[in-house]
Image 1 (cartoon, helix red, strand yellow):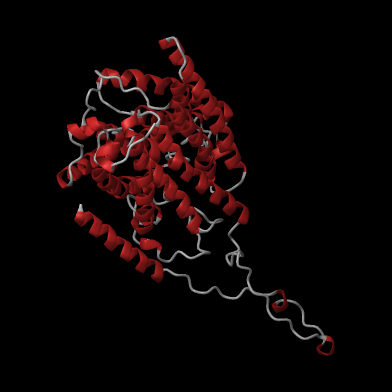
Image 2: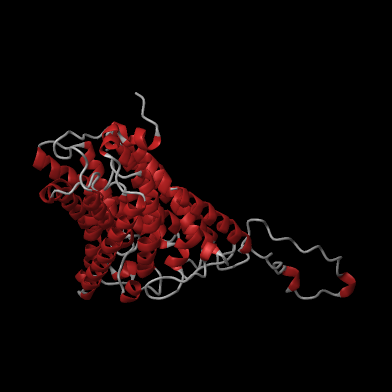
Length: 467
């Protein structure tokens, strides 16, 4: 652990050095109207006025659109809110009281850790040209990124804004995984795992799907806001973690009821609101496509919450608040890849499928196979992302996203979607397993039985919830 802290300190030192090296050069003075105006008669010309200085908020790059930039700044804040406090509260309400603080701490830690790693190396691996499989190091420590630079994916907004927006996606994806191994992973192991997973799993897959040079992007895979990159990715990794770490002590024998479902409802609501930045923000503009993405997100989410609720009501005799919240999240997950490609009718069907299928996988399939996915990371995100990615290929509308789906006669799009899902799931599962084994050799993955019984709040952080 001392070596790890030393490495973090060294990386931080390099980060500060890189920031100094990447500092912008002063912008060239803006051309004034007097420079292009016709010359007046010398006798009548007044004394020349001093050239106006560039306003502090002005952009020297005329391609930058202030309206799009404002929306992207807002979207970045909304997506960050999804992790802290949204996901933290959503997960914290579902664990036992002795693990509440540890669960919130996991989301907070991931936010801080991924922010620094994204600045150092994550962004450049994901979004520079590089090869078909990984980006290059041209943006290591964000060098070369000035206040007016743009990227190929964000021509109308500053690259710094696009980078920050994508950083929030990189934050929430590994944070989602923590729901699969809640109550039993060491905090030191969490740090190692999340850092390695971001670099070796998330960044390459984001490049495959979202970078113009990525091999799945060139193949034509549709993933508007992260069905494969975020949800299939997190869900599969969560399943691997659950299998490698094993079940919680007493799982299936002792009651493990949620501690506080009010926290879960608040967290789910924050996720719902923040998701508009997640999906509509992925348009990287404030135009009509963002508006449609927002509309279909609302429709699919509400539909999935209702479909989960009614499925549970029929199966168990009563509708639960936890079921409605879980259904809403399942709908958010399922519509994510499709949000920039489908119309409201497609969103309705995606919501129905997401709610019903995720209810079955989270409640029945998990028990059928006997794995302990504590907070249903795989059941909701892995399965929901898969359902959404497949149905994107079915319901895609050319007039909205520029690509036809199966219903418009493009059957090949479904094959492309299945290829993307399979490739992401296979790579993710293999590399996640290797990372877990490496971390286990370095610090060990799981807390002791005594620490698990005591609770992670006390054993890992020396704190507890009072009252």
